[in-house]
Length: 423
Image (cartoon, rainbow, N blue to C red):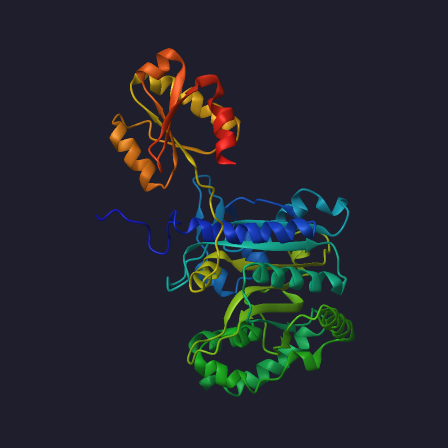
């Protein structure tokens, strides 16, 4: 057996870490400014959190969720998305007693058993923002603004917000009947999945990416023409906020998102592309989910949120000349010779750390020549040479790698003197 990573799982190698950190830094910057607090939910949840919350008929629950029984007989799932666990936590910990809205953000690994392809993995990373306990349309626009801000912070320029309303329990059932009638008369033109969806949830047909279904969808009725008064008013106010914020948005009357818990506002932020044959790619997506808390056994809790896939964003960052987070580089190298020098060198290394001075070392090497070569490869100018004689007599030799000049420094003065040199 060849030892390698499991299909669809991937390593985040050191070369990718600066990109990963860049995304995390942008997310933290935006969430801190908007007053969102970080939450971490477990990777494992009871399967019911997703079958009830996300929807049994969704692709995520039907095809993609890793679900299994524990030795104790519990049916659990590796989390495929972040909103349902956050709402479960909100209910479990009585967060309705806190000042509303409760603003939370998360970041971590998620799991979906889908066909691995470019930019898609079975273990992937997402970040998300959730605002729970407020129905005002200003929350929808704030979540959209934050999503847009993250991408602008990451130097994305040619992006557009696609937005729609999918109504609520008052107006959506009537629209579903109209939609079902339209698709039923064209059933033979739909893919096999959408023929099944026609019985379970016709709205999901609008989310299908199959070309034949796209053609049928293009003439379908639009829910925006069938919204109840409450949903119409809510959506109108959301759009007025977006206009005031001068955000670049377009109405997409067929945008529904792939999860059953959404109500009213739904949106995606897409990258516009002029490349022929290349589809617009969704970078972040979300919306309002006013019924989810009640579905999971809590009280009525209006809420709105968004999620973004980190791997997808990173793959696009790599195609641009985007500056990544530059890791601090050491300007001093500590070379040691002999056991006594190594022991004392370890203590000196900690003194540099306490002084917040980054020092490179090679404690595992004995040869001075090898250590100097390492320092040279790293482009480090100042090398501290600490041998047996220096350890016994309490000094250290400083070598300037540019000039070759050397001088002796007393051991108790070395940290202070080096701090002055590297300023």
